[in-house]
Structures are given as structure tokens and as C-alpha cells.
Image (cartoon, rainbow, N blue to C red; front, top):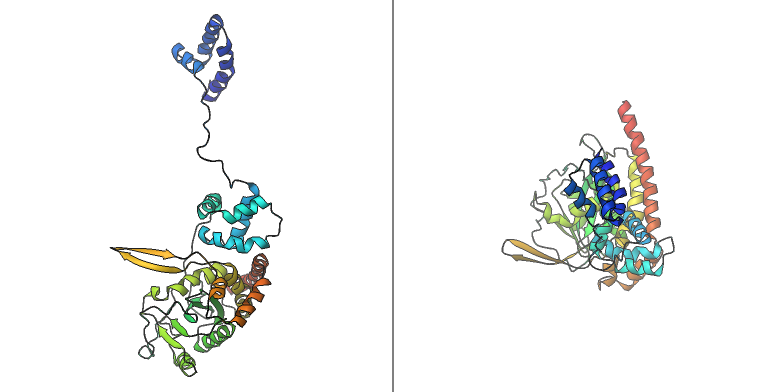
Amino acid sequence: MGKDERYAYLKAVKDRYCQADKKSKATILDEFCHVCEYNRKYAIRILNRKRKRLKKRPGRKPVYQSDELIQVLKRIWMASDQMCSKKLVAAIPLWLPFYDKKLSNETAEKLLSISAATIDRLLAAIRIQGRLMGLCTTKPGSLLRNQIPIHTSNWDITGLGFMEADTVAHCGNSMAGDFIWSLTLTDIHSSWTECRAIWNNGAQGVIEQIKNIEQGLPFPLKGFDCDNGTEFLNHHLLRFFTDRTPKIKFTRSRPYKKNDNAHVEQKNWSHVRHLLGYDRLDDPRLVDLINDLYPNEWSLYQNHFCPSFKLIKKERINSKYKKKYESPKNPYQRLMESDQVTKQKKKQLQACHKDLNPFILKQNVERKLNEIFKLVTVTSNVRQRI
């Protein structure tokens, strides 16, 4: 007799044994020892063993374990590109009014009061891990190193318009040939970020897209800080910033010091790689498709509905740094709170924000991405045949 069969026989006999008189117990015990081949004293012990009562879970009853709440939370988390729980706490009040299904008042109140730790616990089972790495494509430009000053101190981070710039190469696994680059500009004070696609990384293409970004900014451009790549350190860009009134402060970071441009380096992942991935984009027709996505749906989605952290204070204690961050806010909220944005511009931003729905924006982003990657697949198949 196997272990499972013995356990099933024990369950069948135990109730009868406990209710029997002394003489009947002896008969049942003899039968039990014979069938299961147990020692008599061991058989008595397991037949008399009391069943353990299940202890109640310590603490208060679970508040957030409703199917409706978890379903809504997962939907917002997936639609917001799986942002971290602390950002998601700030994003839920922005996204919840646009949820397409009617919610009970109780669920809505719980979602608005939920903590980051609770979100981590509820979403733990569906977290996705894994990260790909791209190629470093910065080729140092030496022509203008003496004319463009190194920026070693912090910008005036309390003022709008001081932006960091960087480029991301969509080259796949090879730098050979021509392919698309993404130009990213990030405002340090508000985290307002704009991206544009360019064919190769020539100076003229970079200047053209910087002009395009500057025209759409809700604040004037005052400072431009970049790395030491040849797409930035050239006479064309230097003249573009200096031969104008008022002049724009043009600086560069130290070579091989990525933390000098930490704000825009982070956006290279959240705004570019997270959207387009690491595939090789070497079809010129993709430039217009990507530039139809970047300034429209993607910019509105990131700047109006995706909160980000901002460092308030950093203090060194012995060999460790203690950092303090403000509550997560999106760039739109920071601009509306700023005294440096004109009332007219705030009215325009407000009117634009009222017409936006984050779920619809995300659907449009996915639709345009499907068009882009269909063309990428066709191009890849043609390349393989050749």
C-alpha cells in the first residue's frame, strides 16, 4: 500500500475510531495495523491525533484583494508602459477619469488611496524582467573642443529652457551603412522631453530637427548641453546658437562622463528604446513615420500623463549620499505650476490637455508602431534575400 492510499484509509477510519467504544476501538486498531502494517503504538498515536485548526491571518482583512480593482490596476499599469509603483501612484488620478468602464465608488476610492507597496504586491506576479543593450555610437569630435566650453557645474535647474541633448542610433548589431537616429532634448527643470528622427547623424539634419523642436516648446530655449559627438561639435551648430539674438548658451559635457548628461541619458531609455527597441531601422521611409509619431501622440502621452521624479536635495554623509525627491509629477504639471510660463501659453496647454485621453493616445501609438514595424519586417526580409 502506498503513502497516498494509507492516508486515504486513515481519513476513512479515524472518525469511526474516535466515536467507537473501547472494545470496538481495539477491533478497528487491529484491522488498521494489519492493513497499513503500522506499529500498534504508532497507530494509536496517529488515530488520536487532533486536527490542527487553521489559524486566522494576522492583522486586518485584505482591503485591495478585489478582482475589479486588480483588473483596473493592471490595465492602467500596462497602458502606462509598466511604470514603477511610485510613479503609478501619481499617474492613477490622471488616468482613472478616462477608464472606459464604469467603476464602483468603493473601487475608485481604493485606487486613489492605494500605496506604492500595495501596488508592488498586487502586480508582483506579472512583472516582466529583461533588458537588451545597445551600442555606444558617440564618436568624439575634436574640431571645436576649445571653442565650446565644458559644462562642469549644474545648470540653473530652477529655470525653464536649459536642455540636455543626445542621439540614439537605431543600428541594430552593426554600425555599417546608413540608418535612422533619434535626437532627444530634455528640459532639466520640468523634464519636458521631445524626440525627433533623423537620417544618419549629419549636422544639417540635427539642426533642422532642433529648429522643429524649438518651435513647439512651451518655453524659450536658453541653454543647450550635449556630449562630444560629431553631430553636435561642428561649426554649423555653433553658428546656429551664437549668431542669433539672444544667444543660446552652448556647452558640452566632459568626455566619457555620461553622468554629466544624466537627465537626457535616462530619457534615451524611457522615450526612445522603450518605444522603438533595438531593431535596425535602415529604411528612409521610416523617418516620416517616426516623426509623425514622436511630436504628436508620443510627446503628448509622455509629457501630459507620465509622472517622473525630480531630485530636491543630495547630501553626502561620510561615504554615502542621501537623496531626497519630490513627489512624482508629469512635465505638464510642472509647467502649470511655474511662474516662468506665460498665462497665454498656460491656457494653450490647458486647452490641449482637456482634449487628451491617455488610453486613446496609447492606442494610436500602438497603431502607428504596427505600421512602422511592418515596414521594418519587409525591409529585413528583403535584406536577407539579398
